[in-house]
Image 1: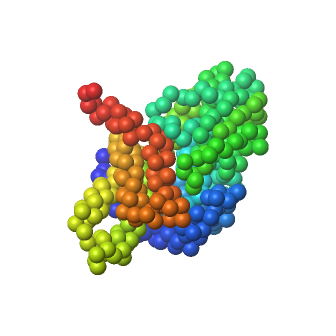
Image 2: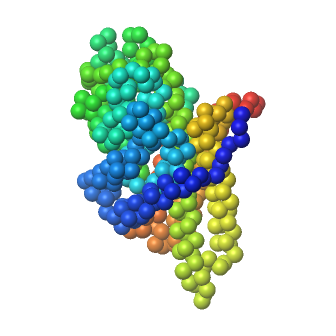
Image 3: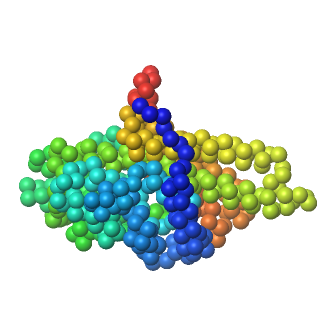
Amino acid sequence: MSNPDLLYSDVETDLRASVRDLLTDRCEPSALLARVESAEPYDAKLWRTLSVELGLAGLPVPEELGGQGASARETALVLEELGRSVAPVPFLGSAVLATAALLGADTTHEPVAALLRRLASGEATGALAVPLSTAPGTAFPSAVAADADGRLTGTVRSVADGSAADVFVVPASGPDGPGLYAVAAAAASVTEPVPLDLTRRIADVTFTDAEATLLAGANGAPAALERALLTGAGLLASEQLGVAEWCLETTVAYVGGRYQFGRPVGSFQALKHRLADVWLELVAARAAARYAADALASGSDDTGVAVAVAQSYCSTVAVHAAEECVQLHGGIGMTWEHPAHLYLKRAKADQIALGTAGRHRSTLATLVDLPG
């Protein structure tokens, strides 16, 4: 096994610059706060720019299927930047979860290849129809059932980016065992509960005798779903890293310019220690997130361990950084007008997404054979 590469390549650095410049211009805090209160919480124009003009929706998709032929490392870097801006785009649901499920199926099967091309080109937006809290290693879901004709019936709650989807990738149990199906959003009933995280919506999706296309049967569906969940959990750590980065940088800048008793409050030793603790956690979180992304990209035998370490650690770091951001901004940090609450809500929502920290620690204990 080769040593993991935790450094950013020149290509990744250039990609970061392009994405950050775009998000700085199009996703500033005032515009973000206005959008989450509007009737259109997702930024469709920004998503089109990211998915179509920059080609980021198809980063991990092979070039012969219309994608960029990149790896999980590049996808992780994009998620890191999206986390820094808590951008209201369906990247996780479509470009990560739905796409990873399709890549885990037989891509020579024409329905799979055709849907991958649509998602990679930005022509359509997808969502994986499982609850956002579903962790890798979870039993194949049974909330949706397929009949002998391949029509689906059932309800899936808390689907990430479900309200923005044009097509759902649906795990369902059928007469011949588990299967993975594609269902047009028009054939489903989609309702949107009020989410904690206003920048990433969830949806309850109901299928009633819905027409579906079989993507993978019993031999391939469980593995495809597990690949999607493992990939999503590993790459979500990079988004959590981006959230923590913004919180720390913004807080350091604020306490450096806020004066009390004739000196910057950031010069007080107690605040220095608190921010230093966050910085140390952030350094370790970056290593864990990069390791998970590199393991996913290389297909390492340690991928399960890397993902469990990254997700169990980065989720808690993001919450801690966001909590310190709110508290150390004082009164203004508690207001709706300051974006700190959006980062805290994203961090808290991510903390239970694709498995809690405790769930991943339990998985890690099993993988490395630690006694209970």
